[in-house]
Each structure stands twice: as C-alpha cells, then as structure tokens.
Amino acid sequence: MPIRIEDPFRDPTLRLNEDVNPFLKQIREGLADGSLPVLYGPRLKPIKGKWKGEFERTMDAAPKDLILEIGSHMGEVLKNMALAHKNTAFVGMDITFKRVVSLAEKAKSGGIQNVRSLLCNAKALDLIFDENELDGLVIFFPDPWARKKRQQKNRLLNKEFLAQAKKVIKPGGFFWFKTDHKPYFDEVFPEAEAIFSRDIEPQGLPGEIYTSRFERHFSEQGLPKYEVCWRV
Image: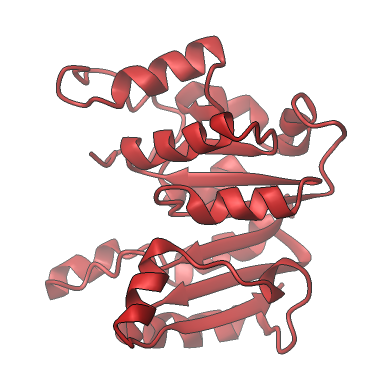
C-alpha cells in the first residue's frame, strides 16, 4: 500500500488499520522503540540539515558522505552499497510500507548501522534535505506511470523535481539514473542534461556495479536498460 500524502511531516500511518496492512504495526513499533532504522512523519522535521549527525549516533564516526536512493524497493541495492561503503550514510526512500520495512529489516538483520529507511514521498525532497546536503542521489527503475497517458503527470522525474535534486546535491555530487523504459529515459535525459554535467568517467560509487532484482530480470530477457550518471 503506497502513501498518497505529499506533506512529509504528516504521519502517514494515522487512520490506517493494522489488520488491513500487515506492515503497519512493524513500522510503528520500529520507530517508537528504535528496533528498526525507520523514519517518517514528524520525526523527519528536525533532521533536515543534520542527517550526518543522525547517522553519527549509530556509526563509529561521522559519515564521510550521504547518499539517497529513491525507490529503494526491497532494499537489496542499498544494502549492498552500505556494506561496501561502511563510512558512508545511506538513506532509502519509498512510499510503500512493505518496501520500507523490507529495507529496514535487511539493515537490522545484517547489523548495518549506516542505513535509514524512510516512508516518504520524494516530491518533498527539498523539505527533507538541506541545500548541498546530499553527496549523491540514486534512482533505479522508477515506475514509468505510462499505462495511460493521463498517468504520466504522476512521474517523479520532471523539470521541477530535477531542480530540487540539484539544490540538495552538493557541487561535485552525483545523480545516477537507470530505467528500462526508453520513453521515460527520453523524457528525463534532455531535462537533466540542461541542469547537470555529464559524468563521462564516473568515480567511486557510480562506477561500481549494483543490480536490482528488476535489472537482473530485464537482463535475463535480453531487454535493454538506459543508464547515465550526471554530476552537479
């Protein structure tokens, strides 16, 4: 069940029935008692501009970098990134209770201290993160919302969102995008090219290989993917 509200500081679990959504109790209890690395609603408000301090509480030292993945799905990609870069803080953001809980449980079971899982609508990106606060933004295989033409307005990646992204990513930081949907890529590419610089030879995280379940599924079928990394 995805959340619909765009105000990141409203509690999206209010008025929802735990008998209907099996993940609702887990996310509520995980936030209340700290048993899961989840955040949502009012708890997000005081962290803007202080995300590295939030992670310093659980990491051995203040994180070197702060990376956000939007659409963390079941958490596999972010988990692997966090394991490979233990001095970097990773935030996974999704609008689905199941996916947020899945990432948080992977982090908990693996003893991964440099991950937070957010139940939040990414359209509020500049309300959650301060200017130049992110070192990188990862968006892999977002929902294209293309089954009907009228649904295209619900796509996350557009000119307005990319402007938000540039604001919160620090100079020298990256925006890494993958999709299997060429019309979506063709729509995003010129808008991003006008805002960011092309990273011809990506260094560090964007130069590494991280494949999601979706990407492996597409590869097994011989389907193409479209990928680019830009720098701010």
